[in-house]
Amino acid sequence: MSMRDLTTDAKVIGGLALLLFALVALLNPARRGQARPPVSPTVLATAIEQGTDHVTADELARMLIDKAPGLVVVDVREPADYADFHIKGSINIPLPLLFTKKGIEKLRGISTIVLISNGGTHASQAWTVLRELGVDHVVTLLGGLNYWVDVFTNPHPPAETAADPEIATAELRRAAGAHFFGTPQVEEAPKVTAPRPPVPIKKRRHKGKGDEGC
Amino acid sequence: MGPLFKMGFFGEQTGLVLAFLIGISFGFWLERAGFASSLKLALQFYFRDMSVLKAMFTGIVVCMVGLSYFQWMGWLDLRLVYINPTYLWPQAVGGLVLGIGFVMAGYCPGTCLVASAIGKIDGMAATLGSLAGMVVFAETFDWLAGFWKSGSKGVVTVPEWLGLPSGVVVVAVVSLALVMFWVAELLERRFAK
Image (cartoon, rainbow over all chains, first blue to last red; front, side, top):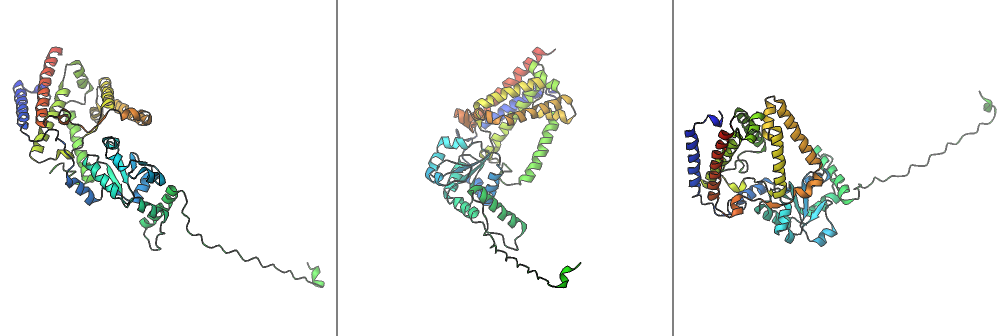
């Protein structure tokens, strides 16, 4: 049925009903400019509880190596610390700058923001502030840079009895270590003992008749 | 209690199934309303059949009044509803490009899929055209990125922008819609064959 089939009466009644509902909506106590107040704590609590507020070092390494589209890794430490060491591919926005209007606008519309600090405290604080301000797609790096450095410069070989996923993780860590820290992680090479020099075979000199053999 | 997904009433998988069902039913009703015909869609640009405008705006105002009541009654936390951030200039240009495409093809991105689904060749051509446009956009994105990010206003809603209570905006938009319906029907009668 198209709009044209409606009778004029139906249109007028529909229009008036809509207007009446809208007029009653005037009494809605939603405050001025408060149509969209900050995110409720329940939502933040749910994200924390479900663990969607962070990524692990392994997950981040994989995302960086795979060049995940729309990924921006934000290092919130001081510029000096950043210059000292940072994850390859991360950008530096120190906390004071991040909390300005300009800093926050920079991060809007990015599909995945990963916040990084040394231990994770500052990153988590930044996470809370950004979420409150409606920047949704933001996570922190679990354990921060301390854990990151530890896990990739000092990967433990999997136990003999390890299951496949554990072996895969260990291999990812070895490869990621080489990717992020430049130096390939070579396990202690087994000691190569020089082979014993071949024992020279002494040819017996036959003497006598036998020499003229076949 | 709402939005149901963000409040954890169902997970992502169920959400995708529901989105699929809602999408299919949206397409079904678009088709039933005759919006799978490029002729009908094109007629609105000649002011001879304004049903697209009327249907779309009816959808918008009913939804707006409904959400306003849901929020009022505490059924829906509007703060959790995703709103696209505003990028003024690129969105203006994007609207213009979409409009030109709409006039040329006789389909918008939704209706061309509906038309394709019922086997219309012009609908399929429009679908392929929009896919081609997406590929070109994606491939030239680095070049366009500066413009794409220009005029960023963050997430803004009309009540925040004008500093008005949301109820006033609801009444204003509903009144605007009613006036538009009335003008649309005047135009239909004026330009009818």
